[in-house]
Length: 227
Ligand code: SF4
Image (cartoon, rainbow, N blue to C red; front, top):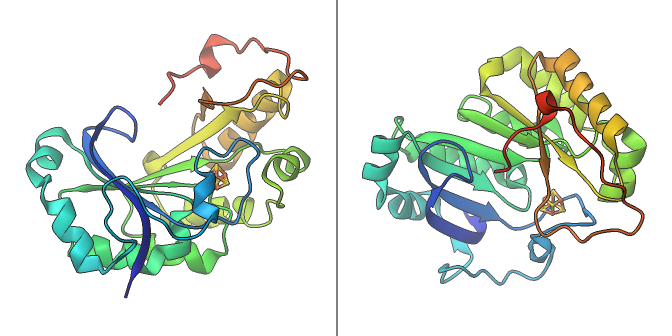
């Protein structure tokens, strides 16, 4: 089995959950977000960031992860799977998790808008589900991502039945030109109603300012530090 890997970024702190982690990003994504900062994930397979080639077996990837084993154990970190959309390669991720030390944290950064068959292989492997839901209003979602949100809500309900809610880290971005204060309030409330968790509201970095965008004041209880 081969993983189609875009970057391997070691010794990351403060950006992908607790502790020191290695971020492994994968090619391809079914979404086409207007402010995508990893747009090359849709392009030809040319990996970078100290990745000499794009294809790794699970064993080869675990060998790289093991280099920082001591840091993961000392800080509560581990491996973070990102993208692109990592769940498109969930069978590979499952194999990596099986070969990894159980003490490492396994996190995934996903849009969750993929068929359930892509989610299922890693349901028991992942310690933290970092889900960027974009916006819970379907029209805004489609306008921003170029696709409909047909899988997202169904997957949230299905995961909720299988995963403890402490493992959910839901993120709602402020998207200039696409959502406003009321839309964000609505998304946060929907998440609370669906999952019983408080979503994190955050700003996209490197997001081009839109002339149509009006800065919205977010109440303190909705504000969380950016990650
Ligand atoms: S989900 Fe992420 S990788 Fe995919 S298009 Fe949106 S920002 Fe880019």
